[in-house]
Length: 167
Image 1 (cartoon, rainbow, N blue to C red):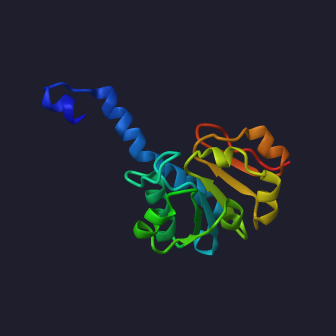
Image 2 (cartoon, helix red, strand yellow):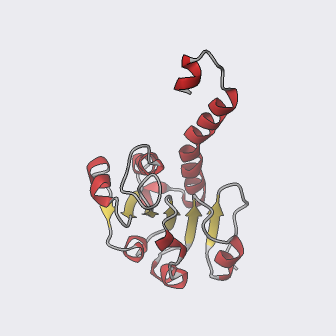
């Protein structure tokens, strides 16, 4: 955007992409809010904090905005990331940090996947479900198959697809 503006070019399609990306975190939190109201009584596990997998970089990470909004609305947040938690703790000091995805999900009313680490692709989802208080998943990366999540007993919310209720 900056380069286009410097060259006097209106890059409308890129502006639209930037605007959509800016609204993603608010939309994701709205999905969580609708399914788990009232948030002040809810514990939400966050899986993935870095802005992309395989890095500890927190710059422009969507997790920061999502977590900030959830905490502002009174939710308790417990998070896990394979490598970014040290950096995240400096930015998000009110969050409880866990040493595994299962520990983060223990007693949770919902799990929100923010960063699509390979580790999360291969989670034991049956184990995840059993440690949760309420088996609700919010998949911000469409990492898991909706039908599989339903068969495993989850209520499953993902981006751009209708929610799937437990069987």
